Image (cartoon, rainbow, N blue to C red; front, side, top):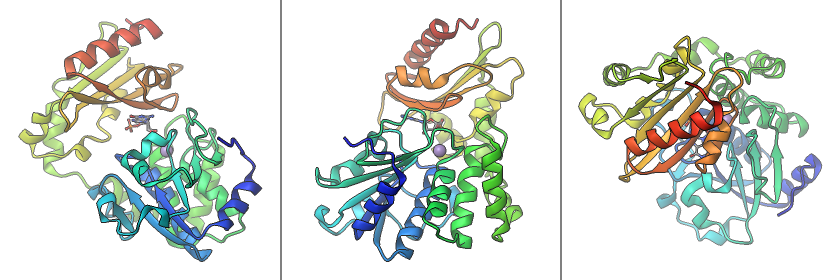
Length: 329
Ligand code: 5GP
Ligand code: MN
């Protein structure tokens, strides 16, 4: 593995290849997708052939603000795997995060890793990783700048949405002077922030509200109130008519509790006996450590992992780990 962080080497290598596969992580969200679409556009402007691919479908709820036109799922690929010389990943701390897309790369595929996770494993032949960047979108913005590429309006929109969402609309602790400066520059390129906000946030379905009401009624806390959690069963989705996507963002409600220091949201996944977990922290509690313990990862204050077992088993294991690590009552 080449841990070459040099930007010049990164760009020089980019120019060597003609056909790129671009992939974000499984269960893609707006930072990963916005970064991917902007990189795709940059490469195409440089005359490269590109294929945007993901194991998962384009999230329906993002269709109002991000373009799914170039999105392909694995089973839609027609070309043989050797067709791609290089792979670009966005927002992936490990190569495992691209899921089954790994099956179509070969030992010869040159990997470009673009990310901002503190837990990034430098799995690429070329790695452009900025743990201080608020979002992967901010890293891609830097690539545009360093390559002296002007940023087109659609690219600006993709990057703005990436940064806006990963900072919780400039509220989370990863909100920095730098990300505000980047956002200001992107807005100056003519994007319509009001329209983006409406398209992104004012989109709840009634089913989603019904799902939230079920989940809100089951929130649990430790006696001190410092840990809060809830588990979503698959039947919560069928009873409310909601989807997995509808549950995204629910964890914020747990963080809104005044006493809460650490929150986690567990979701029963489609393959039985697997539980997807999201962690969030307030103050100095490193939930990346907790997720990493369970073979996941992420950031200090927002991380995730997948556990084998039932919701009940996951709950027990996580509470044990939290008590051991943080001694929160
Ligand atoms: P979310 O809770 O919104 O799904 O994810 C929060 C953060 O944790 C994201 O930055 C995401 O990259 C990371 N994350 C979520 N699930 C996993 C996982 O299963 N494995 C790893 N390595 N990171 C995850
Ligand atoms: Mn991100």
